[in-house]
Length: 358
Ligand code: NCD
Ligand code: ZN
Image (cartoon, rainbow, N blue to C red; front, side, top):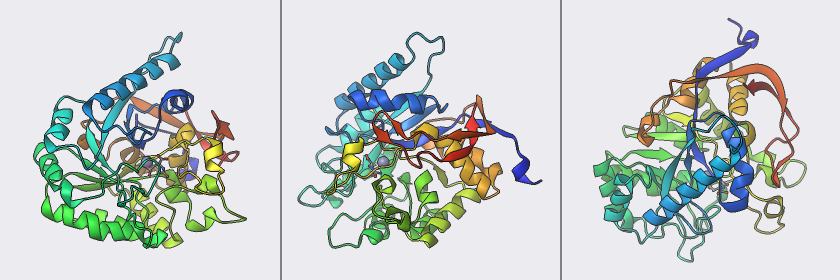
């Protein structure tokens, strides 16, 4: 059947496996976008200015998120059943016992790995407190393997001398492969995958490894950061790569490979931080229409039959979630992406999508 004629598609409610909602004012501004997208929940990233690096901080942050959700729904008859899936920001300090205690108490469902160099310079927004001594964290990985706690890794080399476009593949070989070798039963998610060689590895590895994929990394190659002048709105970490890498990652996704799942990495920054001449903030905001954007990608690749598993099923169990038995429908109907939401410039602002979540 010609998929161009599909008028609507109904799939289980989805789950965002990688999301930044920040805190305070910013959280209140961006949360409605996510709550409108019918996700059953999202994996909430812990890279706040004061990182979520203890049980107490994780519990407090969850409560602030819950208050903010309730505030969005005040006065409305419907209540949100959106469930934040909390993560621990792994530092050099936290003990294996504490990591397991937080998991057992339900403070977090996974551990996020950011890395930083010896000066505390990290590879992305809010990674200054990340791990400096990876080998020193092997006891934590051992405990995680034993207790079935997933490691959600930002795998990018952080040293200044490493070429920006090789950071992911260098980290894959140098950081991740030895971890997998030492802990063959550790559950790993390769976050926001961009490099075709990393995607090949995830697709074929004889390990418990999966990858999240963003909209922007299936849409942009690296030219789009520079075309017509520097475009901070298209700048995120890891940076988009060469065209061949974009195609490789996208092919795994839209061919229905079960190890790839939706994780938007929607990362709001105030427009002032995105327009700094020096030290422009990394992060792209897609939360306003994440579902419609992913749907458009699958349609373009004539692969709508694989949309449901990618958004709503693949490797959900590692976050302790089940495939939702509630459905959501996306209709073939135009919608225009807004320019700004709460002072955040939206990705692909002003362009028209051919899909609308009902
Ligand atoms: C994220 C952010 O802004 O918090 N930025 C990004 O470019 N993706 C952090 C991250 O996921 O690397
Ligand atoms: Zn992120």
